[in-house]
Length: 150
Image 1 (cartoon, rainbow, N blue to C red):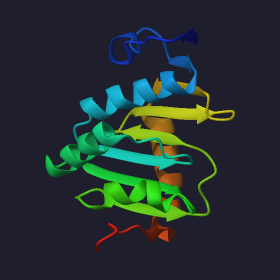
Image 2 (image 1 turned 45 degrees about the vertical axis):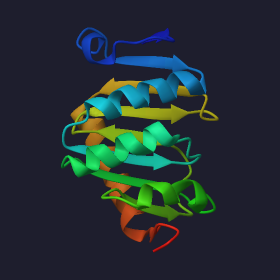
Image 3 (image 1 turned 90 degrees about the vertical axis):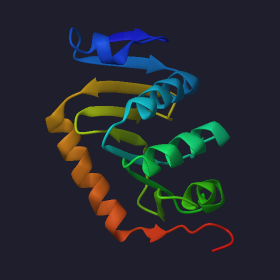
Image 4 (image 1 turned 180 degrees about the vertical axis):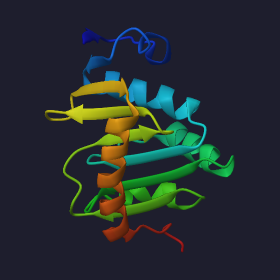
């Protein structure tokens, strides 16, 4: 593992099994980059939703372009999640959200560790499959978030 603030995740993971990114802003930057590259799936388990207007637009755009986009936030953060609900993005909340991770397509994973100020990024279908199972369990039991005017 190598620690860095700037990572070319897609190129460098061929040579390195994982990257550690320090700082919440570093993690958010890497998540944003991967969201832009997503082709088929984005599953986000988010303890502390951080999405700005541009991020919301990007997730809406990914969903309208055919990418399956699902976001589960912690219960109590519904107001932060509502702007995502006014689109093809599936948005839910759950009391079971204790950490944050992002699954992009079938093999890219960004996992927040500690207090959310450090991220581990890797490309591994086996670990992605394990986290997908955890995401699915939480998603199925979670409560749908609807747009404020719905």
